[in-house]
Length: 132
Image (cartoon, rainbow, N blue to C red; front, top):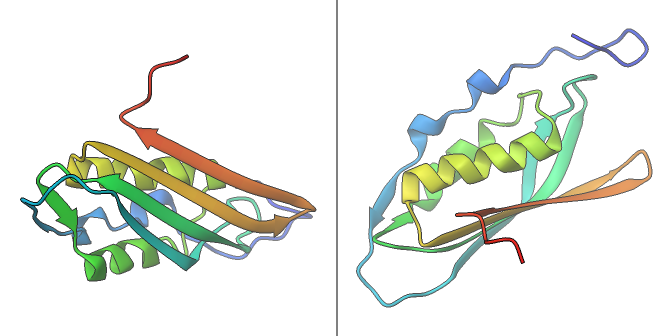
C-alpha cells in the first residue's frame, strides 16, 4: 500500500462496501425527479487512510422503484472506513444504485472538501448521455 511519508492509518478495501443493504420499494406514480442529498459522506484516502468528506447528491427519475432511505444511509455509511479514490467512489455509488433501481436516469455527484488546495467535484450520469 503506498503511503504519505511512510505513514498510513489502517483502512478497509472496497470489498467492505455493503451493497446488500440497499432496498427499494415499488413506484407507480408519474415521472418525477427525486433528489436526495447528504453533507455527511466520507471515505478515506487510499494512500494515507485520512478521511475525505463530501456532499453526496443523488438525482434519479424512477422507472418502477425508489430507494428506501434508511437502507441508503446504511449503504453510504459502509464507505466510512474504505480506502477509495474520490472518482472511484462516485462511480461505484452510481453503478450500485443504477443496478438496484434500474431508473430512467441517475446522476450521482460528489463535492469534496478542499484537499491540498483543490476542490474536486465528480459526477456520473447513467445511462450515459450521447456525446454531442
